[in-house]
Amino acid sequence: MAKEKSIFTCSECGGSSSKWLGKCPSCNAWNTLIESVPQPESLVKNRFASLAKTADVAVLADIEASDFERTPTGHGELDRVLGGGIVEGGVVLIGGDPGIGKSTLLLQALDSLQRSGKKTLYVTGEESGAQVALRARRLGLDGSQVRVLPEIGLEKILATLAEQQPDVAVIDSIQTVYSDQLTSAPGSVAQVRECAAHLTRAAKASGVCIVLVGHVTKEGALAGPRVLEHMVDTVLYFEGDTHSQFRLVRAIKNRFGAVNEMGVFAMTERGLKGVSNPSAIFLSQHAEPVPGSCVMVTLEGTRPLLVEIQALVDSGGPSPRRLSVGLDKDRLAMLLAVLHRHAGVACMDQDVFINAVGGVRIGEPAADLAVMLAITSSLRGKPLPKGFIAFGEVGLAGEVRPAPRGQERLKEAAKLGFTMAVVPKANAPKKPMDGMTVHAVERIEDAMNLVRSLL
Image (cartoon, rainbow, N blue to C red):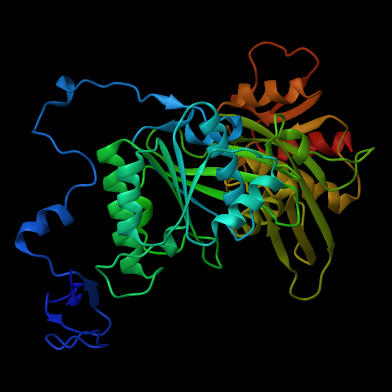
């Protein structure tokens, strides 16, 4: 059967051209021609079919809601970010830097699922079967019965999925897959969008769970059209420094579970292993307290984590530097202004460096109080007391606002042996906590006066 030639349609006026042009010949708009496939009338309906099953109009209260059955992958940290395990017909997109461990983790997960009785398929477009087998032996997966398909043609992959009918399939990676119906190269916007749409329809129609591995840009965002993230059910990001043994997997989107969940893994000679107590890797390893260090309790999804915030305040020049790693640098500038205005701690002529230890990224404002206390400790050259934690959001007026689920944060800190806490007044426990002294503050001045008495 002859391959059908693609056409280019203008996104502005709807005009078409047989080849790509920089300017639309109809409306003269620049860079508006998008590649598409001319389809016979009988095939248009199938090509533009809905990604999910369609149904008649119904009242929401009359629709029967049932929980999705989940299948554990055999890796507790991965199951956490997935919401309990894989879901039949679900499509998962996982991205991360090259060499971060995406293929390693997915190969381990497929082997665990295969050993539990699930049919699995690993489609590799970047490696040969021999390379995948070599990695499996290096990970200690000798005798693994995971089926491997080295293929990048979409039509061949869909035919194999229909023939083999696996329960779980991994496509590594979506940027290498191409369709014969498009003339553009693999990895282009048209190819990625079209291939992902076909694979998503196949997953919904057959019930197979498909995991797509995606490349990322220099900024760390998933490469390709943003519609790719809207199309899938779950989006996971692999984070961490390739020079460190620890890896973080964060859920950005999950239609079957909570978002912002985080799984922590350690890279070993036998692959990735889940870390049961991740707070230990983010805490100080100092024998004695040091200036500029303050521990806070942050929330990653449903999990409270203890993270050490480090600050270094040093003499700066006429243009002092403000550098933040793991926290928002714009928020750091705001906190320094609040610290000066409401607490009398001036850093105008000082370089200020902030670091969240362990490579973790903190996006919630509950880190404000810990950052300001760490800066004050470094500026005065005196350490905070041993067993000290703090958390709370600080407003521009100097008020200390409550953090969500404050009681869970305090319980996690007490469980790990912390004995003193400075928290917002609204987060203070109603009953005294065994082994922990909790100081409730309403304003940043109160927190600074308390810390001065402790330093």
